[in-house]
Length: 381
Image (cartoon, rainbow, N blue to C red; front, side, top):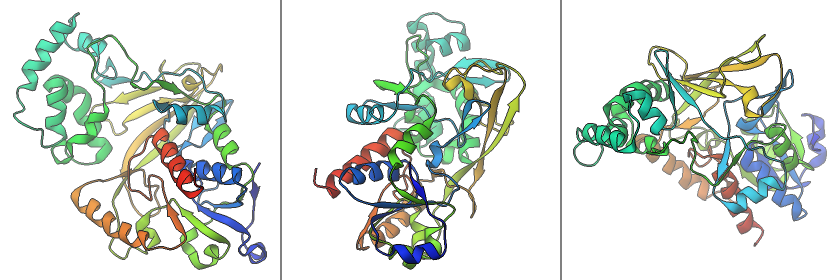
């Protein structure tokens, strides 16, 4: 278990008591904390939210582990990462097989033969390839934006029904204004296979992600509801070294301006029914429907209950006070982050890591791998 410290006079009694001050209670900090404590290091975690775990935090609602900040499915092909998380928690065999709803029609994701068969009434890979190849020819040369990239991958029909509206809702801008690399994360298969990920390993911790993060942070002292940037000098005095996982622009008081993010808003509802949609995730791909997806949490762990919890996920423009979820990696923000990164590199006795400090979109396994690499360097392994 970790020890929670109340703000106030207790702080004066713990000056330089810690080897590391960990700013942020997310997955990157959690892995660092665990590895540091194995080396006998004492850690204090400062977290703005009222809980640890970052965006993978789960709430128990009627025995259902609700992913409070959106669906998180762990997947990786990195054996070291997989063995690391399984040494801390037991994982189930959940396989991510979302579906898409477009004007009442249901399509399997990722794009595979089930999708193509429903879309065009065909049976064979040869038929699907012929249709897609014909439609792909509309894009000449290297795709210049997301719209052209999507059409070059799956053709006009799939793009218009299953990609365009969803993506424009998610990012708050036209697909013609978005970079092409975003859509490359979607696998395309000419087989009947609804497994969203290609990775070797996949699953969700039995009991929810809190089982994992509680183990990782076990033994740390913790200060919740605490904003490090409100009094950096005071908190820095409490430890010999700082690991910072927050936003870089806030660390430097937005001296070059603010980095842009996309945010999310969640609308969660407890329903008096056993099974609402029959799958954990349904994407709503029409531009006119304001939410991007509905999550039914009980399906992540096959929870038996006569009730169910659903969450509607709404994309939102990020504003001060909202949670930053997705970096906007356009030319302006990339250049701006580079300036802040130069300032960070000059900071003595500070380490940086995680999706916010690195201004990157990270899957969970990449967060863990990055944290393990940092601890290898820090502790000489």
